[in-house]
Image 1: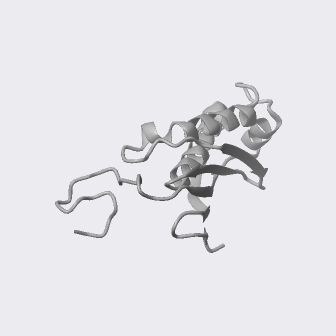
Image 2: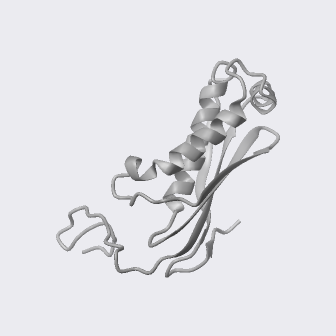
Image 3: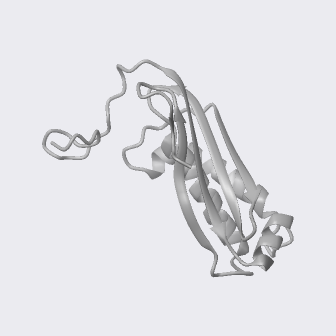
Amino acid sequence: MSGLTHLDEHGAARMVDVGAKPESQRRAVAEGRIRMSGQALAALWDGTGPKGDALATARIAGIMAAKKTGELIPLCHPLALDAVTVAFERESDAIRVTATTSCTGRTGVEMEAMTAASVALLTLYDMGKAVDRAMTIEGVRLIEKLGGKSGHWRAEP
């Protein structure tokens, strides 16, 4: 049909059969950022916002989300993740989130990394909305993928 892996020969949605694929080490890194006012940035970064330690809460939310990706994205395989990390970097008007996921499996962990980054960003919004409702989430993307048949891929800077 279209060459899309999640469509069968009739165009119907399907879950890809990965049973015959060999297991390999897989890793993915995704990022995104949330822009905000200086007041909100200080409150979220310092943990002085009305809802408490935003970074710790967002880190846990991102990890939990990565583990549930197979339940959230209809055709994703549920994966036994080996590790998930969620890191934060303060920028002049934003917080950048970087999520890294890994597993030994038959399919990649890209969706898990992007889900972790997205939910961590949404959690930061929730934790800071009392200070700044105009925060903007942007640039959620895969930046690196390793493992599997296609090998190593890295996004252009």
